[in-house]
Length: 408
Ligand SMILES: *[C@@H]1O[C@H](CO)[C@@H](O)[C@H](O)[C@H]1NC(C)=O
Ligand SMILES: *[C@@H]1O[C@H](CO)[C@@H](O)[C@H](O)[C@H]1NC(C)=O
Ligand SMILES: *[C@@H]1O[C@H](CO)[C@@H](O)[C@H](O)[C@H]1NC(C)=O
Ligand SMILES: *[C@@H]1O[C@H](CO)[C@@H](O)[C@H](O)[C@H]1NC(C)=O
Ligand SMILES: *[C@@H]1O[C@H](CO)[C@@H](O)[C@H](O)[C@H]1NC(C)=O
Ligand SMILES: *[C@@H]1O[C@H](CO)[C@@H](O)[C@H](O)[C@H]1NC(C)=O
Ligand SMILES: *[C@@H]1O[C@H](CO)[C@@H](O)[C@H](O)[C@H]1NC(C)=O
Ligand SMILES: *[C@@H]1O[C@H](CO)[C@@H](O)[C@H](O)[C@H]1NC(C)=O
Ligand SMILES: *[C@@H]1O[C@H](CO)[C@@H](O)[C@H](O)[C@H]1NC(C)=O
Ligand SMILES: *[C@@H]1O[C@H](CO)[C@@H](O)[C@H](O)[C@H]1NC(C)=O
Ligand SMILES: *[C@@H]1O[C@H](CO)[C@@H](O)[C@H](O)[C@H]1NC(C)=O
Image (cartoon, rainbow, N blue to C red; front, side, top):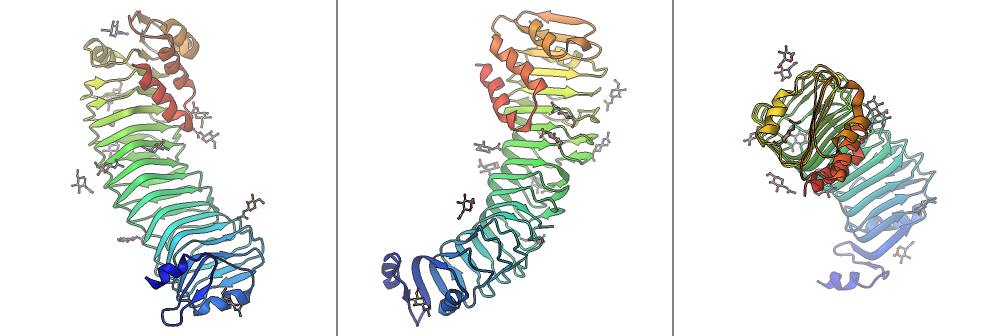
C-alpha cells in the first residue's frame, strides 16, 4: 500500500531496502554504471529503457519489471541478458538492434507482450525455463530458426513474419482469441497439436500445417501461397470463412468434419495442381459466397444444401456443372448470382452475366446457358467477376464482404 503511493510520484526514485522495490515511472540506463546501480532492485516498478549508448546490457539482480523493457535503435549492442528476471509486466520491445546476437533470459516465464522487430543477428533464444505466459507476440525480421523458449497455452495474437530462417514453429497453444498469422517467413513447418479454436488463422509460405485438434475458426481461415502438397483439417467442424489460394503444390484437401462455413464464404482458387476439390463430404451450409476457380475436374459437395451468397465456379478443365445446376434449380443457392463455367459447359444466371463472363473467361466456354434473374444488380455481378481475376489474399475479406453485402 505504502509503495503504491510512492510509485505514483512519477520520476521520484525510491529504493526500499527491506523489499528491494525500486519505483520510478520510467528509467533510462545509458551506462553500465546505471545498470549496476539497479542491481539492488529485486522489483523494478516502472519501465526500463536500455539506451542507444549501451554496447551490452546485463540486468543483475532484477527479478521483476512491472512495466516495459525497451531497447530500440541501437546499432552497437551485441548482448542483452537478465540472469534472474522472471517477469516483465508490460511489453518487451526490441527494435532495430542490428548486431544483437545474444538474448539470455534463463528464468523468464511471464511477459505482457513481445514485440521484436529487425534483429538480424538473433538466431536463437537463450531462454532456458521458457516463456509460458504472454498475451501477444509479434516477431518480425529476425534470424530465429525456431521459437524454442516461447511456448504459450492461450494467446490473443501471434504474428510471425519475415523471419527467413524460421524452420519450424511448434507450440502448445490451445486457443487464439484474436489472430494467428504466420506469413512470409522461411519455408516454416507449423505444428499446433493442442489448438482447439482460433478467431482467425492465416498461413502463407508455410511448408506444412498440423492442427489435429482444431475444431473452430470463428472468423477467417486463409491459406495462401503455401508449399505443402496436402491440407488436412481432421477435426474442423465450423469456420467463419476459408480461402485456399495459390498453393501451387497442393494436390489433396481434406475437411472431413466441416459442417458449416459462415458469412465470409468459401474460396478455393488458383491451386494449380489441385484437380479434386471433393474434400468436404459433410459440408451442409455456407452463409456467404462460394468461389471455386482452377484446374479441377471434381468438386462434389454431397451434403451442401444451402449457399446464402453468390456461387461462382470456373474450371479450366473438363468439369460437369450438373450437380451445381441442380442445387441452383432446387433453390439451394440464395445469392443473386450463379455461374458455373468449365471447358465443357457454362451456366450463368444474372442480369448482367453476359458482360461478366465475357470479361472473365469467355474463351473457355463451349456452350452457354444464360438465365435472367429478376433481382440481381450490376454491382454484385461485377464484384463476383472481379474476385475471380483478383484473388489477392489481402483483398479476400473485403471482396467476400462485398459479395456478401451484394446479396442484400
Ligand atoms: C542510483 O540510482 C538512483 C535512482 O535513480 C540515483 O538516485 C543514484 O544517484 C544512483 N547512484 C549512482 C551511483 O548512480
Ligand atoms: C528509431 O529510429 C527511427 C528512424 O530512425 C525513428 O523513426 C524511431 O522513432 C526511433 N525509435 C526510437 C524508440 O527511438
Ligand atoms: C509446450 O508446452 C506443452 C505443455 O503446455 C508441452 O506439452 C509441449 O511439449 C511443449 N512444446 C514444446 C515445443 O516445447
Ligand atoms: C480477425 O478477426 C477480427 C474480428 O473478427 C477481424 O476484425 C479481423 O479483420 C480479422 N483479421 C483477419 C486478418 O482476417
Ligand atoms: C475433436 O473435437 C472434439 C470436439 O468436437 C473433441 O472432443 C476431440 O477431442 C477433438 N479431437 C482431437 C484429436 O483433438
Ligand atoms: C470461437 O469459438 C469457440 C468454439 O465454439 C468458442 O469457445 C470461442 O469463445 C469463440 N471465440 C470467439 C472470439 O468468438
Ligand atoms: C487425401 O487425403 C485423405 C486423408 O489423408 C486420404 O484419405 C485421401 O485418400 C487423399 N486423397 C487423395 C486423392 O490423395
Ligand atoms: C473425378 O472425376 C473423374 C472424371 O469425371 C471420375 O472418373 C472420377 O471418379 C472422379 N473422382 C472422384 C474421387 O470423384
Ligand atoms: C438458377 O436458378 C434460377 C432460379 O431457379 C433459374 O432462374 C436459373 O435459370 C438457374 N440458372 C442456371 C444457370 O441454371
Ligand atoms: C496464381 O498463381 C500464379 C503462380 O504462383 C501467380 O503468378 C498468379 O499471380 C496467381 N494468380 C492469382 C489470381 O492469385
Ligand atoms: C505468392 O507468391 C508470389 C511469389 O512470391 C507473389 O508474387 C504473389 O503475390 C503471392 N501471392 C499472394 C496471393 O500473396
